[in-house]
Image (cartoon, rainbow, N blue to C red; front, top):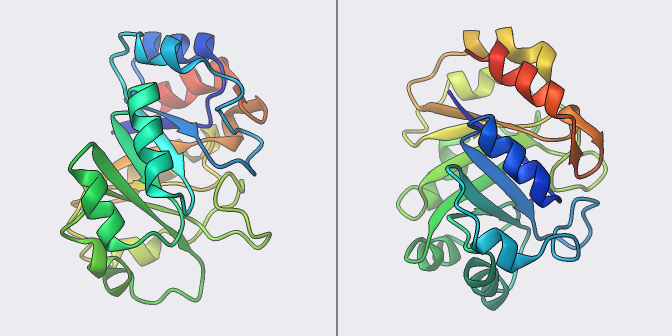
Length: 209
């Protein structure tokens, strides 16, 4: 099972994640986020590092030029679009990097397949996160009911996200879907926003084996 640790703001922590053999590391480019990365990490240091994981840039309703600049400056391998971005934007970006399209889920969502259908041909992965009651795009610490995913076809590799911590490993391992690809963790494995507790990250990784 692939593990994506999101909201990294320190080069040292990226190096530690590499040592733990994490699969994806997320850098958040949304300015309203407490984990906003651009004033905390030197892009050259990231681009010149030889990490074994894929570096994911997370954006919320961005301008295309800003995403392209970040891909170039930071050497991003993947772009995660976490807002209401169009299928056309996903398609254009997929010519540059891999694309994760994120969807915010709550009890009002009844048909996952209808939700993802416009993006089926234009991205590489889906990510399903909890829709925030506070208007946040992610990092809410809240979970949605994963049963809605098990009932859907989806037919694209997807990550489960939203309020996932060490105590959820058994539940995550028992969840079954043919396209279940990875787990996205963030706020539940932190000391403070943007600073991960590496002991918890290691514990989570071991729990997912």
